[in-house]
Length: 154
Image 1: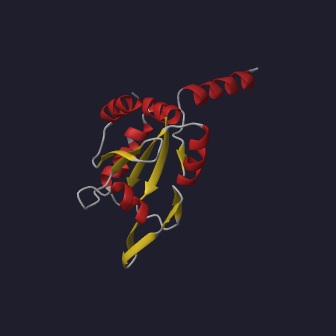
Image 2: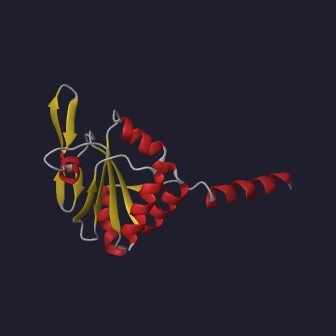
């Protein structure tokens, strides 16, 4: 009986309070848009950017934000230094090396460049037609990000 109570308790916690952020790939989003149209939020970051890491560890761990992103949007986590080819919107994007073990992905540049430069972290929001409707390059705390999500949902 104790085992059954423990199992029910842990199932209750995992199903209600501690859900995980569901990150999709660009390829998945391409096909999911045929079944359900949603805005796409792309989080463009690097491993060395401390504001990117802070956002991952605060904003994207907030349960309200996780719930809103999972239910109302397609969320894509894009490392700007990703080395694999990515196909999105019937186009293939590649990693472009710029020195010894340094470079940036073409898709990160395409979605994250503002005023001829890319500054991390970048949030890029695409509409259902995969057109950029918003770019924001700065840290967003959970409160401000929640407000942004509410505006985007309208």
